[in-house]
Every structure is written in C-alpha cells, then in structure tokens.
Image 1 (cartoon, rainbow, N blue to C red):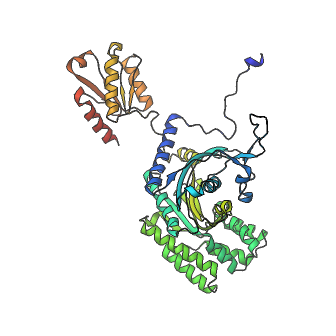
Image 2 (cartoon, helix red, strand yellow):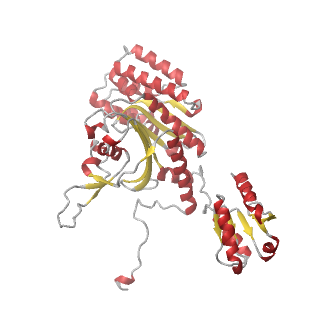
Image 3 (tube, rainbow, N blue to C red):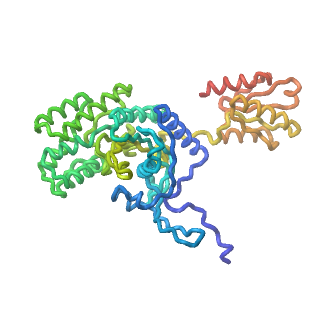
Length: 459
C-alpha cells in the first residue's frame, strides 16, 4: 500500500475529544444562552480575548499555570524576521482578563463587569472528564482602587438563578472567606510559610478525609495539636447565624486577632447581601473548609456542589482577588468572579443523567413533501410559519409519508404539516402530533394560530 493509500486517522488527538452530537450541542447552547441571559440581567457585558497570549502574560501569576501552558513556536514574519515574542494558548479566562483590562484601561468604565465563554487550552495529562481544550464560562467584576463586598454577595444570586433556570436539581453554594482561615491559622501560631500549605491541604478535605488531611498537615511541620485544631475549626456547622456566632466566640477566645476579625466582618456582610438578594436558605451555606487552592484568592471564596452528586466535585467556583489585575497596571484593582468549566460539567451531568440532550433539530414543525408538483406551496407555507417565529424543517425530497414521519421523529420534530391535492382544493391541511399520534384537519388560514398554541402547550 502506497503512502497515499494509507487510511487517515481521523480520531481527535488525546484530550481534544470535545465534539458533541447535535442533540448534546443544542443542550450546551441552551446552557450558554441561559447563562448569557442571567449574566446580562445583572449588567455583565461580553468580551472575547485571543486564544494566544504572550508567555510572560500567561506566566504572570507565578507557578499557577507553568505546567499546563501550551507553548507556540515563534512566528516568522513575511519579511523573514523571526518574531522573538514567545507565545502560548490561554489556559483560563482570568489572566487574559487582567491583560485585557491593562490594554484597554482608559477605555473601560469601572467597576468593570464582564462575562466570557471562550475555549481555553491546558497541556495537562488527558483522562476521562479532563480535557486539553474546553469551554470555560466566567464572570468577573473588577474595581479600580476598591470594590464593594456586595459584588461578592451578588455572585451566589447569579449562580442560584442559573442553576434554577436550567433545572439542574438541588445544589448548595458553599461560601467562606480566606481571611477567616488565614487569620485563624495565624492565631494558633502557624507560620506564614506554613499557611500557604495549610490552605492547599484543607482544600482537599472533601476529597481525602480528615485522617489524611491531619497526616498531610503533620508532614508539613504542623503539630498534632495544631492539626486537630484546624480540622475542628473547619468542621464548625450550623445555619449562617449559628456559624457567625461561633466564629465571634472563637475570635474572642483567641484575643480578637485582626485578620480573623476582618474575615468574619467581610463574611457577615456577604451573607447579609446574599439573604437580601433573596437566595433561598437551602441553596447556600457557610463552609469553613472551603479554601480554594489557588494562591491569588484573598477574601470571599465559593464552591457549588450538586446534592446527591457530590462526587462530581465543585460545579462552579471562584472568589475575590486583590493583586491579579493590578500587577499589569501597577495599581490596586480588586476583583471577584466565578468560573464554570462547561465542557467537562456538561459531559458529567449527561453521564449522570442529571441533564438530558435536547432534540437533535431545533425545528418545531416539519412541512411534508407529498407531491413534488406542490413544492411551491410547501415553500410558501414554510416561510409563512417562519415569519410567525416558528422553526420549520421543509421536506425537499419526495418520500413515502411513513418515511417522512420517521425522519421527523428521529430529528425530534413533534409536529408535521400535511398538504396534498385534496387539502389544496379545500384550503386546509393536516396537522399530526407525533408525540400523541393525533391528527386534525384545520384551515390553512388557522395554521399559524394552531401551531403557536401547540408549541405554547409543549413549553
């Protein structure tokens, strides 16, 4: 076999197997449209940043992304000079947002609230549920000099509305403040170098359990007594009022340490705002074990879990940061945001049967082709329906009526319009509902009204 005759391997590269079938893609689009609608209800505006950034930009927040950046070879310009700028594919939306703000600082109005739903790329080991290319959906609010904690309170309201609207089932938004944790660590004599490690270890509590967390803490030089105090602190439970009361008592017992007190105050403000925004009490809580391992978080942090499917991990997470944007512009620019790794989340939710794919076709009606000589009528009827806001699939090929019903059924189109010579003569048409099996005869002039009523019932 010659080289030209060799069979082409058309499978996607490892980690890039993100293709959805039409029914799955329509579900993804529904989720994107839902998020966009909710984001815009809260005043967020869309932006898009390049897939490619300079490596120095991607590496700006230290070692957070060095091990997952896809580097790109230098570009050779048309004049033959090699572009010396080293480049890479963006691995998240947050660093590109910081660079975007720096590039357009004088053209933006602050606080700047944006949403972004682009593809990101990570050069990490591919495995089930972990992709090298995936869609990440983010919102962030960035202030210039200061940023109200009410923006932190608004985030859970946005999360709750999105997950309610997509009917994802019961979920819990878990809220904490990094200053509460770091302030407590300081108060029990954990050194500054150990605090960073403690945050990362505590963040693994749900995954590895108390015994292993205690062991990991002791490996880092934390005493057994301190480790037990940390675990005991993160396990404080109750409703929001009860936990805030227990934190106040703990603070008093520790001598009211400054950072701890500030964290409690910020957490209290955020919780009050969440309540004022009408988020149901069973949809959020204070969870002192939420630490978020990324180093740039400085205040409020969030993780959202799906009740009954906790093994999926956090389905939406984020928090407040103080230095990430400012490092590009040399001034204080605090921000707060959340991220949803949509590609991975959608695949997990479909595998778990939490969400089901939509119909393969967005068409609500199929106009059958019973007689080729009536095609002009079929086209005219189809256009009339489309002008009324109805999605229409028109049968261009003449097939047996049973085959056309089968096609509509496979595409998930629930309604079929049937027009033959007899119907033309009587100015009527048949309307068949494939879901119920019923068929009625109606006047052509009433078709739009009847279809709109049928579609309204379905929805």
